[in-house]
Image (cartoon, rainbow, N blue to C red):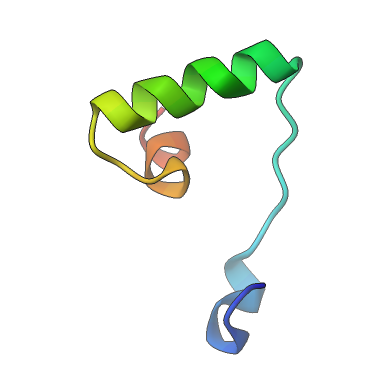
Length: 42
């Protein structure tokens, strides 16, 4: 659930495959970033 103060900045992102999602999760973990920050940096 999105915090009320953040709803205006919230979006859903769909990656092309489930494998791509897992790859991004692993890369985010290696970078010690949450997915939301990792996606923004990418």
